[in-house]
Length: 157
Image 1 (cartoon, rainbow, N blue to C red):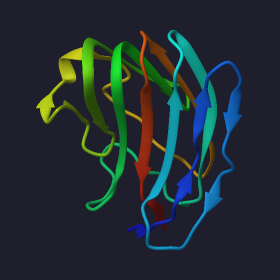
Image 2 (image 1 turned 180 degrees about the horizontal axis):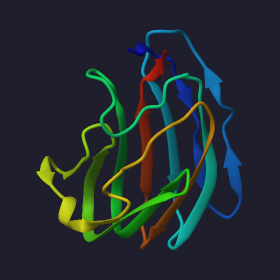
Image 3 (image 1 turned 90 degrees about the vertical axis):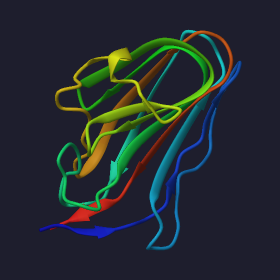
């Protein structure tokens, strides 16, 4: 069985006329690892990676107590997330809503209501993180501000 170890990793990206990246930083143990990406231009795509230090992969069906959610907040019509070659897309015009994709339990909610009907793509597997760099592409269509936030616990064998 894998054990949970928590860290904090924060990546902030703000897209305006130029791209500015905040430095990634690691803080103390026993805090949930977090990566945050924010973009402010319509039809924008951001390519990045999440460094996962856990030795045990995390994803659909991981052990009890595991955490790997993606929270998407803002005003948007469509967005897609590609992580390690798997893509999940969301299509439903929302004004100032929050969509939470729970990759461990295989669920998606919008304002606490089931929103699986608006997802397409690799929803049979959802996303997983593996040791090392995990390639991620975030695409947003529409105007306004949208934030993608990845929360996860690192697991170890």
